[in-house]
Length: 292
Image (cartoon, rainbow, N blue to C red; front, side):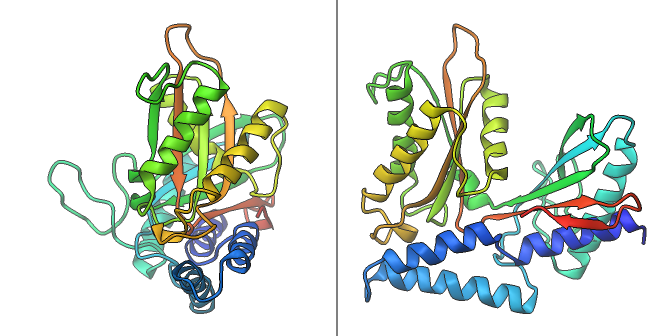
């Protein structure tokens, strides 16, 4: 097994079994805020136990190990074809070892070949940069939370949402309301304002690469993130829709250019099992540093 394949295999194992520290801290902080003896507190306690058990046994934290999304920052001249081939081999091996569940199926026939490799699986987002560093980030995104993502075209008469930040706020909170009790909350929102239908969703998912405690460099978006988080947690939806103070663990929003005729707000939802990890490689392609 090559050093690169071994590094990617360990990245997959750790991403599947271990919640990042920033997410775990948010979950533990939320547990402390829930009223003792409530269903919400019991749900958060079970989540805490699930996290500890998965890490201790090095087993998937959720039976749905999700869509496999690689985000790679690489130097100019990096052999992308070789990387993709190696990553697919690592995914097959990770599935064989049980780090990933066999849950990628042919969309037309429903056939599952048991490898998690096929058209669109895994998915690669490759970004060249002028640094010599190779950084590989991985998100495993479950189907339940993917199902409650939403996209809005503004203006939206039913929501009374115009083409402004107030309208965006209405759309985002509507997505939270529609997701209640689904998507394995408490969740994290990744939001993109602008773009087209495809890039809007793509950029919304990139927001999951951010750390939960970070603050948006754009003052207006930072204010919107904090306002959405506070308002959502005051709705009383709570963990798994059982009621309580923890509906969301975080909100991350970006804005990209759009066409004058279109104004999309794309909302991606991540479940509490926020599986996101990353590595920086040494020159010999062994792991040099964990990024989260």
